[in-house]
Amino acid sequence: MIDVSPEVMGQLAPNRILSASVYLGNFLLVTGQSPSGEPTGIAPDICRAIAERLGVELQLRGCKTQEEVVDSAASGQCGVALVGADPARAKLVTFTPAYVELEATYLVPANSSIMSIAQVDQPGIRIASFFKSAYDLWLQRNLKHATLVHADSVLASNELFVREKLDALAGLRTGLVAASLNIPGSRILDGQFTGIQQAIATKNSNHESIEFLSTCVQEFISTGLVAALIKKYQVQGLSVAPLLKISS
Image 1 (cartoon, rainbow, N blue to C red):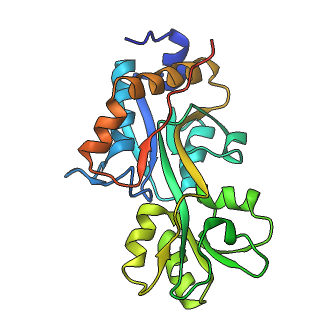
Image 2 (cartoon, rainbow, N blue to C red; image 1 turned 90 degrees about the vertical axis):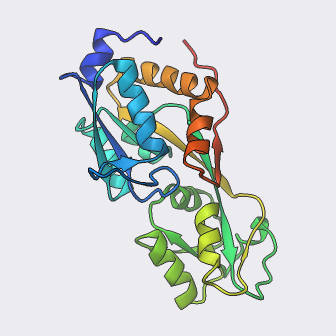
């Protein structure tokens, strides 16, 4: 059992209630709702596991945007927030090591000459992407030649790709598989341009808590909890993150 110091308890659950936020738009990690309207899925169950280790009640908050999730932790409104880890977001909050990874790749239209991920980042190539998603933030930092064309949701990026006859659609592999069913002749490229790491975030000043939460992640992976949750919710397109050694 993980020891919980008074400092950690004060930072994460000062009234013996852990307030935690999850992103409702991540259909791999938030897969439904309970009869009472509470989010269900891998991310909510990870929040419950943290609350159990703290020995406190869980107050779960479902957010419609990833910015709202990050802000909830940065402001201290929520003790923890589960969202994709990214250097831009890490300026606002502190992340644990990842507990799962999501594969991000491209879909290309019928008759496209693009056969590999390496061929996408070329002058003149236009890519539809969900603005400020974790994979979009990666693309903003790493693309050298291709141009991103932004939309304000995953669905909108799919529609933009078709409407504007763009060269590629960026997304999580599972979402692209679903999108391809409505885009005749489209292909999903092999491999990934990045693995989106999903982690636990907390307020930057919560130094004691980040060590506690990182240890929680290590336990959740090593005991098989994360793998069991992936199996429980029958989610495709993500994997248990590598177990990292936590420095003391």
